[in-house]
Image 1 (cartoon, rainbow, N blue to C red):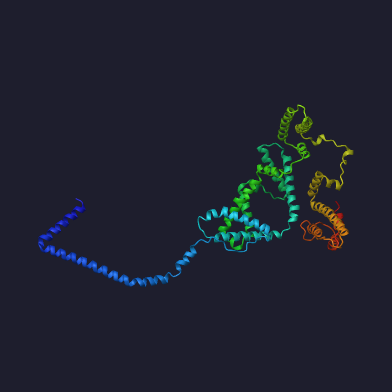
Image 2: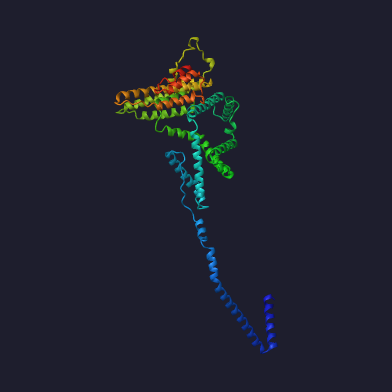
Length: 487
């Protein structure tokens, strides 16, 4: 039997014994018990109700005192602040640049920060902190950029580095040959970096260029230096923030940019975009055909020319356009002959040095003056390479800058003289732009703090300084120094 059935049996047994024992008094005793229980419950309910009614005013007063203004303060603190507080948003000092930078920052915050931050919080304090941090970085970068003399870097150092890179590649290509195979590519890389070690005095960048991990580590170190120079002190010492910014710079900006600029397809598209408005002339196209060393390109051009010749010949049926058709056919035939001549020249192979026999009376045949060298692009390029190999490129650049200054000075001074003759009132000529250009040349090549200072006697430099300080600046300011250079 179940426990419930046992309990019921015992309960029935107890009731039966109770009635058997007390008889007719059992009913009276039961009614008295029920009345006692009901009275007890009524007394407890009444007492509790009276006590509660007495304490409600006091409790309400205490709750009112404790909660006065607290809920409103908590509510106001938890309400989302949708407006960013006003603060000084100037960055570079130039309104044209600041407006563009503000627009870029707004789009960057909207697309890359608010998309995930709004899912976490509606407070704008984090966005304000990000904006102010970027603003401080831009201000620091702008101030440091103003302290740098960009003119020598862009006109001399950057050009020299690019020219050195091209020369190294050409020498490596000549050493390894022109066959486009995998082994040849590896040999080209090895030859290039070996020559770089010789040129850079035991400094080589092969690991950074060939190993992705070394490249990433180098970019991380570079990012650390940039963050040290640009970030505020409190932000730089915040290691989690600094590491996050460093990885964003390396993986989101530097490496994708390098991969994009190294993509041949992107380079070709960029060249096409640059040449979209200003197309090449026919003379330039013929020069490229005559100088090309790629047999595949020449064959592709020849096939396209043959296709165009067939189309124009199909239209050669006489009529009013007969002259135009014949002219186009003659031009295409000329281009086809140029391609075939260049292809025969490439198939015959390069001419060895043993095959070239130079007569004694022809060794000094090509003697060019300095003016002829400057007027010919190929001669000037060869001359610059020769002077650079002798570590004298700064003298050549100084000579060219002085020539440009003299031409500009002669033109401006002659125009000012014409204006003074035609004007009624006598006005002093404004020579400040010309004087500033002369100061740039002096600071770059002749001053004591010049990065590419020339070894010139002090008396010649003093003569140039006196002419710079004179009231009437003339075009012969650097003539004595230029003559002393001796090109």
